[in-house]
Each structure stands twice: as structure tokens, then as C-alpha cells.
Image (cartoon, rainbow, N blue to C red; front, top):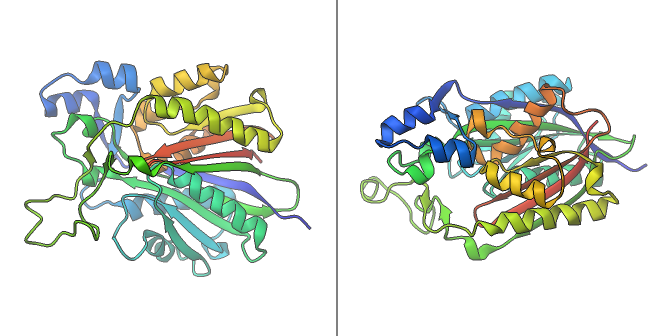
Length: 330
């Protein structure tokens, strides 16, 4: 009997601490609101407290997704956590999350494809379920605590990035597919454009070096603005072709929430109404690997998704890594 992966529940969490564009304007000594709000679409963002970090966000989102799905932690067979702001270099953040949840029967691993991480992890999770009968409940989390790695004097980064987590519970089903098709891609030529380059094996940190080489996000070179404008529609077209669907069959699109202007242009290219693209950057800022599951959960809780709706998740992140999925909402 054919096994399918269906979405059984979603959850999200944003830290309590909020920074508005006005707050950042005062911190930076210049008005950033016109560009950040008008072009990027961000009005405020949520930031971790000093004693809060990636695993804390992940656990809160996971608990909400499990509650929505009606699944106990002990029923989980696998936890996949997507992040490029891990709790530690080693061990994997998913190990800590498994412990805190009490998911005693779940295997775990982390995925780092930057902001395409969640889509990549969800793709893997769906295929675990369809390929192997020992995986019946898989928890997929996107978690992001980039505020811990920001230079708060750098307006190119501190005005955009924020913290949060989103989670999805996938469940095995024989009633027809939730997961429909996917497409992953990468262009490693952009590896040096933006990232956290200190703290790994190439540039290790120790207590002597920390003062000279901080472990912060570096915006070295801008990725061409045309990149997502070209690649997102291409990938969506490939996924829909593999699904046997047309653009008008899609009920909702969920894109990486970095730039509202990009999403507007892509939707125009697709000849689809902007109302089909659910966005959250206005209230939560740019939450990287967490932004797509946070947007999905937000849309679900607003009642925007109905059983049988086709949804597209399309993301890209540093590296560059890209991923696109089609699901039928159940």
C-alpha cells in the first residue's frame, strides 16, 4: 500500500521582545522606516532575550505543532531541525530539542541550507515517510536566532533579521498525497556573499582571537536582485509540472520572507493575485529558516487554508541554496 506524507499540524513562536523601525532609527541615528517598511515590508521584529536561544524557540514552536496535530512527543519517530544559528557547533540542536520535548523514540538530525533549510528538511521528511514504514510521525522545525550574530551598528543587517521558529508535524497516510512534488537546487558560487564565517574550522575562535574576529553575520557582497526573481518562478513551474498542476490550481504561496517587493514582482510574473502570497515580515521581520513555517502556521490559524488546497513553499538562502515544494493541505 502506498504511503503518503500529510501535514497533521503546524506551530510557530516569536520571542516577546520587539524592536520597531522607530527603535532602530534611534539606535542607528537615522530614519530607516521609509525603506525598511515601504520596500522590504518590515515594521517590527522580535528578538531573543539574553537568556533565550535557538533551542528555546524551536521547542516552543514544536510544542504548538504537536498540540495542533494531537501527537504526543513519544509518538515522534524523527526530528529534523533546520537552522544556520545552531545552539552549538556540535552536537546538533535537534538533540537538545528532542531531550526537552521528551521525544524519547525520535531520531534526530540538523539541516543547514541557510534560509532554504526548512523547505529542504520538509522535503527529506516527506520522503522518509513515503520510503520507510518505520517513520510515521516526523517533526520538522525551522529555527532562527540571528540576533545573536548581528552587528547592531550595521544597518544592512540589523534592520532585517529577526528571531523565531516554526514547526510542522508530518504524518503517514494511505488516503492520498499531501506531499506532491519538490525541487531542490544550489549555486555554490555565492558562498562568500553573506554568512557567519568565523567560528568554524576555517576561522576558529578562541579566547585570544575573539576580540579581533567576532562571530557575526557578514554582508560581503550583494546577491543579484534578479536571482530570486528568475529562480523562484522557474522552480515553481518545475514543481507544478511534476505535480500535474497549473498555477491557477495553487491556493496559497509561501516564499522566503526577506523582501516584500520581490514577492510582489514574482506574483506579477506568475500572473497570480498578491492575496495568494501570505506574508508575515511586517510583524515578525525576517526569520530566515523559520519564516516559511511561521507564515504557514499564521495562515492556517487565520483560516486561510482549506482542506484540499494546493500550497507552494518556495525558499532560498545563503550559499545559494533553493527549495520548492507542493503540498495538498489536509
